[in-house]
Image (cartoon, rainbow, N blue to C red; front, side, top):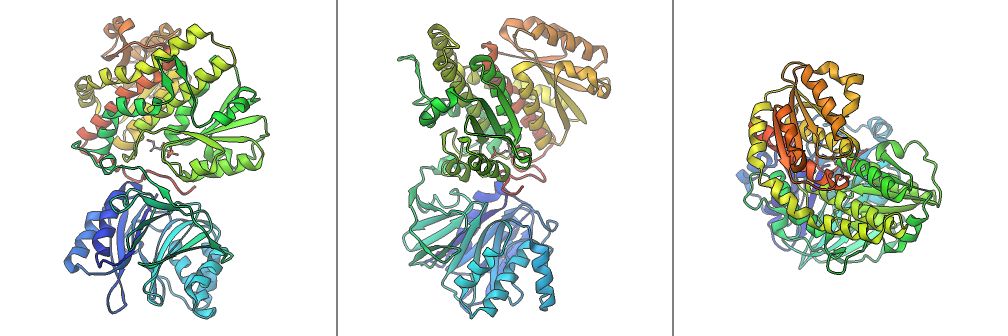
Length: 614
Ligand code: M6R
């Protein structure tokens, strides 16, 4: 949610560097974008515009201003509608300071009142303008030391922020700070960068510092200094990032989403690498080794996440309870954090997050640890806030996911959760060695089966052509595939804007069946399971209302295709693992429907990839 990039260095190419960075960060928000540079006359020049990065860049290219220092921002609007005026960077009242901000200042209205009484005027509807004016006010009052003013102001701020600031008073220095929202410092030869994530800086350096909450960074082209809000100096830890440039490029695909869908055989394999070995018939849950005993003795397991990550948690609930017999609860992070959950040291809480930056999930980790329970992460982004805040965790190793609709992260989350479940079940002796080994073989075979499904993309494309003009779609499934129905519906609605809902198949007649009309698409997951005949009965109920049934079937129950309007037949796998296969056609369906509608699959309206505000 909002992307920040800032640069200071010995080369006067700040403008170019910042726009390159904004293109890499655009997936975090694309309501508007802009940059601010200090020119040689020490004035701050701002180039910003509503809409995608290219539009603000066009403005900059007309002037091509050379500068050694600047800040840039791509916005997902919180306070103030997405328009030119509310775009970042935002200037302070005196125009001496410019800021970019990711997060929400909760006490902005009381601060604004104080500033209004002192004669400040405001040009935007943003909380960010209040913040920069408040910093300016303290700077003016407290004897013109910018560092001191910044820490004093930030101590009085409630809410979340990652900020970067340039100013006319100390023109060689770039300032940054964070609380809640992410900020990474990139260190290169006579150059420093501040960014919301590593993607815009890997071109220049692999050396980074992950700024911690309530830390302030001050950099020139020569020096770096980090302090906390008490003005104490911090000795930072420099980390190496292993991201490769190809991983954040489209690689010949028309969109990141399609690239990420097609990449799944590889990304799932990467998630299993070093963890599963069919030759030695072994499975290790690297990453959470120190907490296996805690898990084996857990009173219950709680799984916390949002959106797609929450859906992965629901699949795990079915799997863990069936095979480990440990009670499992799955919670939305946004609810969990505010309901004073009853937790103690006998509970183990898993936090699932692709970005590792989701504000509600991060806050839930803090609450869990405060209450003495164990917090384990299942996170994709290496070095992210949730990965660092949890006691231990398993990285997905799925590689960067840039398309706003989560795809490969979901299948990697599932494979990790399945591996954890299988390992725990064996350690608890709930499954015998023979079954354990069988399961290891089945898990290992999944990438091959995913590859086979991806080959069927044209069948799915043809179905998309039939339904892309529809207004509403229902998804139904049973048992472990019910969350896959929810995930399929989420994929469709978030990128194609077609209303879509997922339901347990038997629930349809408790209300949603009233929505069915002649031709309403109902997507049914009906791969072979103990309950699949009951799902067939539900298909009959839907057909009786003349809805259009699209079924996901497997090679063992192909015969069902005669009963439905359209079918997608995928390879057969043990029902417990079937969610990881069944979601693939649903991802492709959402993708093709959106393409037929002529919409941007990677940048759906109103959304951003990483939700760093609550
Ligand atoms: O980064 P996270 O996994 O914590 O993100 C959670 C949700 O915001 C995310 O899954 C969202 O629902 C996606 N847009 C779904 O495709």
